[in-house]
Length: 215
Image (cartoon, rainbow, N blue to C red; front, side, top):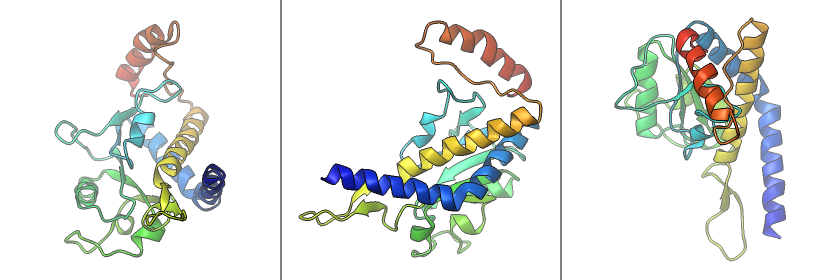
Protein backbone atom coordinates (compact mmCIF):
# COMPACT_ATOMS: atom_id res chain seq x y z
CA UNK A 1 0.00 0.00 0.00
CA UNK A 2 1.08 3.56 -0.67
CA UNK A 3 0.74 4.45 3.01
CA UNK A 4 3.38 1.85 3.87
CA UNK A 5 5.73 3.13 1.20
CA UNK A 6 5.22 6.69 2.44
CA UNK A 7 5.88 5.85 6.06
CA UNK A 8 8.98 3.86 5.14
CA UNK A 9 10.23 6.83 3.09
CA UNK A 10 9.68 9.18 6.05
CA UNK A 11 11.52 6.82 8.39
CA UNK A 12 14.43 6.80 5.94
CA UNK A 13 14.32 10.59 5.55
CA UNK A 14 14.45 11.27 9.29
CA UNK A 15 17.22 8.74 9.75
CA UNK A 16 19.22 10.51 7.06
CA UNK A 17 18.64 13.82 8.83
CA UNK A 18 19.81 12.37 12.15
CA UNK A 19 22.90 10.78 10.63
CA UNK A 20 24.00 13.71 8.48
CA UNK A 21 22.77 16.85 10.27
CA UNK A 22 23.35 16.22 13.97
CA UNK A 23 26.47 18.40 14.17
CA UNK A 24 24.87 21.35 12.39
CA UNK A 25 21.62 20.96 14.34
CA UNK A 26 23.56 21.25 17.60
CA UNK A 27 25.51 24.23 16.23
CA UNK A 28 22.24 25.93 15.27
CA UNK A 29 20.83 25.35 18.74
CA UNK A 30 23.96 26.85 20.28
CA UNK A 31 23.76 29.89 18.01
CA UNK A 32 20.18 30.49 19.12
CA UNK A 33 21.03 29.99 22.79
CA UNK A 34 23.96 32.39 22.64
CA UNK A 35 21.83 35.03 20.92
CA UNK A 36 19.01 34.76 23.45
CA UNK A 37 21.41 34.81 26.40
CA UNK A 38 23.00 37.96 24.96
CA UNK A 39 19.70 39.79 24.65
CA UNK A 40 19.22 39.40 20.90
CA UNK A 41 16.07 38.35 19.06
CA UNK A 42 15.42 35.13 17.17
CA UNK A 43 13.13 35.43 14.15
CA UNK A 44 11.60 32.64 12.12
CA UNK A 45 11.01 33.51 8.49
CA UNK A 46 8.88 31.33 6.26
CA UNK A 47 10.09 27.74 6.68
CA UNK A 48 8.76 25.64 3.81
CA UNK A 49 4.96 26.08 4.06
CA UNK A 50 4.49 27.80 7.42
CA UNK A 51 6.37 25.17 9.43
CA UNK A 52 7.61 28.05 11.59
CA UNK A 53 4.12 28.40 13.07
CA UNK A 54 4.60 25.04 14.77
CA UNK A 55 7.08 26.78 17.09
CA UNK A 56 5.81 30.34 17.50
CA UNK A 57 3.88 30.86 20.76
CA UNK A 58 3.15 27.14 20.95
CA UNK A 59 2.42 25.03 24.00
CA UNK A 60 5.63 23.19 24.83
CA UNK A 61 7.75 25.66 22.89
CA UNK A 62 9.96 28.58 23.95
CA UNK A 63 8.59 32.09 23.98
CA UNK A 64 11.69 33.59 22.39
CA UNK A 65 10.86 32.55 18.81
CA UNK A 66 9.22 35.45 16.98
CA UNK A 67 7.68 35.58 13.52
CA UNK A 68 9.64 37.56 10.96
CA UNK A 69 7.29 40.12 9.42
CA UNK A 70 8.80 41.93 6.41
CA UNK A 71 7.00 45.22 7.00
CA UNK A 72 7.41 45.29 10.77
CA UNK A 73 10.53 43.44 11.89
CA UNK A 74 13.69 45.47 12.38
CA UNK A 75 16.66 43.15 12.20
CA UNK A 76 19.66 44.17 14.26
CA UNK A 77 23.25 43.02 14.48
CA UNK A 78 23.49 39.88 16.59
CA UNK A 79 19.93 38.77 15.94
CA UNK A 80 19.24 35.34 14.43
CA UNK A 81 17.04 34.83 11.38
CA UNK A 82 15.85 31.48 10.05
CA UNK A 83 15.04 31.31 6.34
CA UNK A 84 14.13 28.49 3.98
CA UNK A 85 14.42 27.67 0.31
CA UNK A 86 14.38 24.03 -0.68
CA UNK A 87 16.12 24.87 -3.96
CA UNK A 88 18.43 27.36 -2.27
CA UNK A 89 17.75 29.99 -4.90
CA UNK A 90 14.26 31.44 -4.26
CA UNK A 91 14.83 35.11 -5.02
CA UNK A 92 12.88 36.69 -2.17
CA UNK A 93 14.46 34.39 0.38
CA UNK A 94 17.98 34.84 -0.95
CA UNK A 95 17.53 38.63 -1.05
CA UNK A 96 16.33 38.64 2.56
CA UNK A 97 19.18 36.44 3.75
CA UNK A 98 21.78 38.47 1.85
CA UNK A 99 20.55 41.78 3.28
CA UNK A 100 20.37 40.33 6.79
CA UNK A 101 23.95 39.08 6.59
CA UNK A 102 25.11 42.57 5.60
CA UNK A 103 23.53 43.86 8.84
CA UNK A 104 25.45 41.41 10.98
CA UNK A 105 22.48 39.12 11.51
CA UNK A 106 23.22 35.41 11.89
CA UNK A 107 21.26 33.62 9.20
CA UNK A 108 20.41 29.94 9.46
CA UNK A 109 19.02 28.46 6.26
CA UNK A 110 16.98 25.36 5.56
CA UNK A 111 17.64 23.92 2.12
CA UNK A 112 17.96 20.65 0.23
CA UNK A 113 21.55 20.20 -0.82
CA UNK A 114 20.48 17.56 -3.34
CA UNK A 115 18.25 20.15 -4.94
CA UNK A 116 20.39 23.27 -4.50
CA UNK A 117 23.47 21.75 -6.09
CA UNK A 118 21.54 21.00 -9.28
CA UNK A 119 20.16 24.48 -10.01
CA UNK A 120 21.67 27.81 -10.98
CA UNK A 121 21.57 30.88 -8.71
CA UNK A 122 19.36 33.86 -9.49
CA UNK A 123 20.82 36.37 -7.02
CA UNK A 124 23.09 39.05 -8.49
CA UNK A 125 25.92 37.80 -6.28
CA UNK A 126 25.89 34.54 -8.18
CA UNK A 127 25.38 32.64 -4.94
CA UNK A 128 22.76 30.35 -3.46
CA UNK A 129 21.81 30.30 0.21
CA UNK A 130 24.23 27.66 1.37
CA UNK A 131 27.14 29.57 -0.13
CA UNK A 132 26.92 32.64 2.12
CA UNK A 133 24.71 32.16 5.20
CA UNK A 134 25.99 31.58 8.73
CA UNK A 135 24.85 27.96 8.84
CA UNK A 136 22.98 25.63 6.49
CA UNK A 137 20.65 22.86 7.61
CA UNK A 138 20.04 20.25 4.92
CA UNK A 139 16.46 18.97 5.13
CA UNK A 140 17.60 16.04 2.96
CA UNK A 141 14.67 16.38 0.57
CA UNK A 142 15.36 14.98 -2.89
CA UNK A 143 15.78 17.28 -5.87
CA UNK A 144 12.34 18.51 -6.96
CA UNK A 145 11.03 17.68 -3.47
CA UNK A 146 8.81 14.61 -3.81
CA UNK A 147 9.92 11.17 -2.65
CA UNK A 148 7.87 8.47 -4.38
CA UNK A 149 7.11 7.21 -7.85
CA UNK A 150 3.48 6.08 -8.07
CA UNK A 151 2.31 3.97 -10.98
CA UNK A 152 -0.22 5.83 -13.10
CA UNK A 153 0.78 9.29 -11.86
CA UNK A 154 3.29 11.35 -13.82
CA UNK A 155 4.50 13.56 -10.96
CA UNK A 156 6.33 12.14 -7.98
CA UNK A 157 4.35 12.01 -4.72
CA UNK A 158 4.93 13.11 -1.12
CA UNK A 159 6.90 16.23 -0.27
CA UNK A 160 9.84 15.69 2.07
CA UNK A 161 11.00 19.14 3.17
CA UNK A 162 8.15 20.06 5.51
CA UNK A 163 8.25 17.16 7.93
CA UNK A 164 12.05 17.10 7.84
CA UNK A 165 12.31 20.83 8.55
CA UNK A 166 9.87 20.62 11.46
CA UNK A 167 11.87 17.72 12.87
CA UNK A 168 15.10 19.69 12.52
CA UNK A 169 13.57 22.80 14.06
CA UNK A 170 12.40 20.99 17.18
CA UNK A 171 15.70 19.12 17.37
CA UNK A 172 17.78 22.29 17.34
CA UNK A 173 15.37 23.82 19.85
CA UNK A 174 16.12 20.87 22.12
CA UNK A 175 19.83 21.56 21.73
CA UNK A 176 19.21 25.24 22.47
CA UNK A 177 17.22 24.55 25.64
CA UNK A 178 19.87 22.09 26.78
CA UNK A 179 22.64 24.67 26.36
CA UNK A 180 20.66 27.43 28.07
CA UNK A 181 19.99 25.26 31.10
CA UNK A 182 23.67 24.32 31.30
CA UNK A 183 24.57 28.02 31.05
CA UNK A 184 22.26 28.87 33.96
CA UNK A 185 19.32 30.24 31.98
CA UNK A 186 15.84 28.75 32.24
CA UNK A 187 14.04 29.55 28.97
CA UNK A 188 10.37 30.41 29.16
CA UNK A 189 8.44 27.39 27.89
CA UNK A 190 4.79 28.05 27.13
CA UNK A 191 1.90 25.93 28.31
CA UNK A 192 -1.07 25.16 26.08
CA UNK A 193 -3.46 28.10 26.30
CA UNK A 194 -6.44 25.76 26.00
CA UNK A 195 -5.44 23.59 28.97
CA UNK A 196 -6.78 24.73 32.37
CA UNK A 197 -4.46 27.34 33.83
CA UNK A 198 -2.24 27.42 30.76
CA UNK A 199 -3.18 30.84 29.46
CA UNK A 200 -2.93 32.44 32.91
CA UNK A 201 0.51 30.91 33.38
CA UNK A 202 1.69 32.24 30.04
CA UNK A 203 0.34 35.72 30.69
CA UNK A 204 1.41 36.11 34.32
CA UNK A 205 4.67 34.15 34.41
CA UNK A 206 6.22 33.53 30.99
CA UNK A 207 5.41 36.77 29.16
CA UNK A 208 6.47 39.15 31.99
CA UNK A 209 9.71 37.19 32.45
CA UNK A 210 10.45 37.37 28.73
CA UNK A 211 9.68 41.09 28.63
CA UNK A 212 12.15 41.66 31.44
CA UNK A 213 14.95 39.25 30.55
CA UNK A 214 14.44 38.24 26.90
CA UNK A 215 14.29 34.52 27.62
